Picture (cartoon, helix red, strand yellow):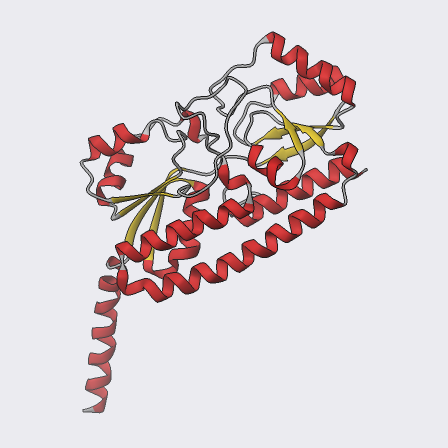
Length: 297
């Protein structure tokens, strides 16, 4: 009899597993960095799908029919806002989705664009995640949205978020400590597009970019000549490539100025699992290591 009960218990437990898996909250994040935040906060209670995958550019993304299906199946959609996902409203409309939407940048003091390359009517720089302090706001907004969508998981979401926020606090301290070791006169670099404004404001490294905040913009010959002149005049030590941008322009600028190519910075996208920045924390640590290596010597 005990043997039969044991078999029944195993069978019932095995049958329950798929049901439990199906009960996970379906969450769609527009791009990889938001997806990583959602996974850290949601843990085992969520199934996170990302529209714009690793090493892909959200600025110029073209949605696919399968993306509409993902939105249709979602209970929660996480967006950056601030004009980053200009393609999203049409996608949501075509999907007929009734999913709740959370704007992860809600409450962040936005940086205004002053370079004339804005792709958003509000003139707000969308790359707010580049400040780790801002990333904490993203996480809090995602936590609250998950609780609203799945009240039964409130304690789990709060605990996961608290653990992740403590890691972000440590990350922020480490970045500040690393920048403090760079001589002040060397805290200037050239990057491909203007994705690091929030990083610059938070940590005190100046970024100069031939492109504006969107990779869609094309720098003029005058823009490029002005940057080359500025590099030579200010003796800016390093030029950085980006994982979402064509490297040819930056290599040309480096060749014409003698500035070193300091490596690749990760701006708008994570890498896949085999790359150096498969998570947000890895991304920030990679970037600050590349910056300090190029600027400290």
